Amino acid sequence: MPRLNLFGKSENKLRPAWQASVPDHTIGLSWSPDAKLLAAAAVSGPITIFDATTGKPAHQLKGHGFGTAAIAWQPTGNLLASVGQDNKVRLWDATTGQEAKALEAGGSWAEKAVWHPGGQLLATAAGKKVRVWTAAGDLVRELPPQAGTVMDMAWRPGTNHLTLLAYGAATTFDPTTGTEPVKMLAWKGSPLALAWSPDGSIFAHGNQDSTVHFWYYEASHDLQMWGYRTKVRELAWDPTSRYLATGGGPVVCIWDTKASSRGPEGSKPQMLDGHEPESSLTALAYQTRGFLLASAATDGQVLLFQPANTRGPQVGSFKFKEGEASVLAWSPDDKSLAAGSGAGAVAVFRAG
Image (cartoon, rainbow, N blue to C red; front, side, top):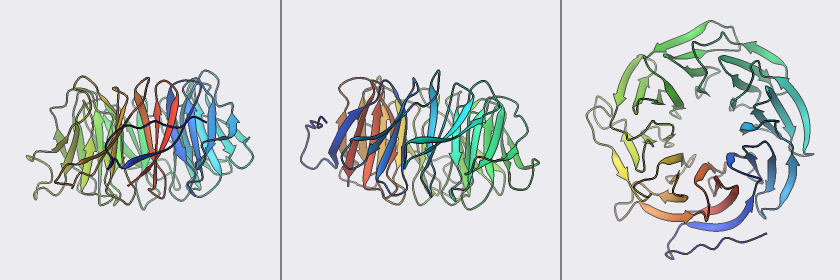
């Protein structure tokens, strides 16, 4: 297994552990709950489960015909869920590397898979349809078709409520009780990506029109931030639910939701640069409990920031030899950062 060659300052907090590869563009990364295994999906279909300590493949999974779109590890167990262009939801037993279930996603392709933090419910999206399953693969509920393709979805922290993002609205359901919306928050536009704050009080979505929308959920009050260079797909909340990092260009923008009594409205975000000026961010990821923020971009770089560091927020860097840096994932214990590239590289770093 080749080792990473990382050249930089001695204080670089991205310490290389190992590097491996998948057949082509790395579209998804997901850690096991105990941080001992890392799953990596190639866009063409195959999924590799690596030993997170050595980088050696533990299992090779066939994935999905015509391509895998997303993977998600069960937060409390050994199941890896995947969805893809073959209209299938697949549940894999990570202990044996065998397929445990193959389920019908309900559309011609499936693009999203999200486990409830409790690990007993899995939501999958295919086109306008969302289905919710038990960990055993039994269908709990099919939710009403949305007005457009479900672009993203997320469980509201601390609840059984699932928020769906589609054209014109963010709609929240409780799939354990029925199919009537718990709340619908309408907005005229094309949203792309959704992120709930860890305390469940605010969700944000990035949009096709190069804006970011904040919703204060209980009050149904919204704010809009603009000025981004490109459409916004990259969103990451810090563990305190105070700061939201956003992409939409080469610079990381961090909004302070407690900047004033009006939240971030009228404030200036913290701007973190370091990526090439002509690049665009592809992923952002805060530690689950820590203070480090990672960014990835089309320039092939993975940067590590400590936003509160007044002496210089950038504390680590790495650049893939080929392709964009396409995806990021922190291990559940916050000790390791995984990154994938458009050329099929997978790298793991010890961080901090």
